[in-house]
Length: 337
Image (cartoon, rainbow, N blue to C red; front, side):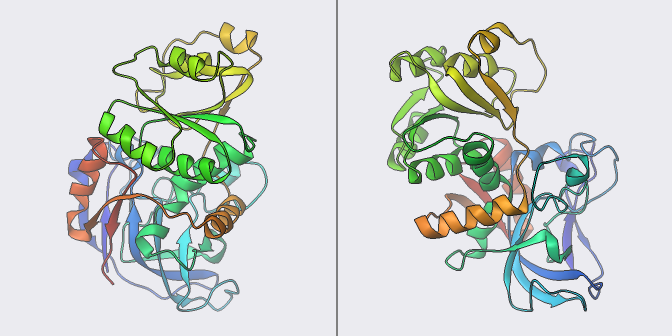
């Protein structure tokens, strides 16, 4: 059985194709024949740093979808032939997040999905929408669930609210599609006019080129009549957090979902305090959120934006495309049966 593995600290040069022995499932396990995997920014970080606290080789990638090949004797939720995707945190099924819920993160704390076959507990899987291809279904577990949680669970926004999104990566494009389907106004920032045109075609109401308008928070305030946006999905990190807070209305929310420019740096508390604003960390979501998301995208007929699909043997090229930020939407790796 073919797979890839990385060793934290070795960088992308350590991404290696390996052979692993196939085995029968344990009583509560499901064997999934992976058909597609999608990449997240996190997948470029893990090979470089000791992300999970232990520098041991592991199969990367949290996001994958495929077909059930076999089930253990105690499995009740799935049967052979079902189409499934793994959930990001194998132990977070519902309810609030805590340390116990985050210990088994695919492609981080435990082996992930970049393999021809994976063994997962039956509770760590969800059925995927019938209308989705495997490549489309592989785009759901991290980016889409993160966007869902940030907007509708922790963000608590409603139809008619205004959200500000940063960039055109997987989470931001998912958030654009979900927010528009739910009747929200979307402002989106990017450094590329070509990408801004594409997001307007997807429904973005207003766009800001942050290279041409470095003080983009002022433009966001202008676009909202001085009020500010109801919620910002903050992906930039240290370089953008202050501007995100300034662009948010009194009583609004900054949902922090990433740190592309870094996670450390000075931060001014006064605008957050004096504006009675809320800052929330968003760490993907639970299986229940994933299932709610699936019902919504099915009802609204929303399909993910797939930037490009690479064959399994070109996995490194897929990583390089994501790391170079040449993508628009999700980068996918197709896995042979």
